[in-house]
Length: 415
Image (cartoon, rainbow, N blue to C red; front, side):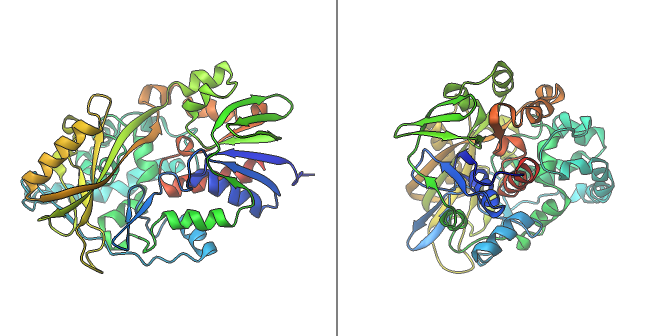
């Protein structure tokens, strides 16, 4: 008989941690505690207010095929009532350009028509998690496209993948790209009017979910976790005892506070990240659309503007845009800001001021070699060992939909 009174601790109050707690409590578990070191819930769903309107510094949209997001929205009465997104493609000099060149259209149509039948071979990718995916998908996405004779597909996958901070198509395993951009999601991005946004901002969804949970503790930084018969968690304020612990925090960071086994350490040390910078500027002179710059999508353009997002163009005037650029340890926030501002001026913008900046440790993933060596199968094999379970972005993909989907899978399988 399942013990619904056992104590379950969840580390992290982002989309994964909150949805895991929500699904556990919906199954009748009565003693679920969520610990979050920050002062707010939502993680990378981060909404700010400016002149009485909401702006997104993290996740910003969903699509109609994101059934898990829609389910939670329905549960808490969240409506799909945000601003409509309008999209354009531009050269670095601010001239309008085409996503597909005229001379490529016929060949692009040929390749695009083949895409559904090619994707059918990899339907396993639609299931939660990334264990036992087809070996073809270990290779970088660019190589996968070439192998399947669809190299022009980079032009439709690149803008929503790279511009959303997930890295470059010649580096990231195809499994991640197809996990995020399945056929329905990809076509929703192509037909941009299908995108879902929220007037209150995406963080509101998680605040509503959090308000329905029994025990969330903010400003509770975990200092140590010891796993014996029980799991002992020491925070900076208290000592707690749990029967099970679920980690939805960055797993590589758990090495510094948890009694990690050698198997855990050997896996966690392989986790990589991108560095995703979001700048919100008061600005004049840019087209009032979400403007992509295809010239900046290759990996040799690190630090340059990938896209700017003009949020309220269909509802009200505003002067605030959010601008997105990838960085790394060499191109830090300051250097990236300088590159971004030079790009904006070249695009024709007049910069009034920087309103806010956020740099995200973003998109936990592994490289092609590590994936081919069975990273995800080995990690899934550790589920429940030492009363420990693993959730969060690394287990599937760094999108709201995939985080919720994996949380539901984890709860249904093990609880």
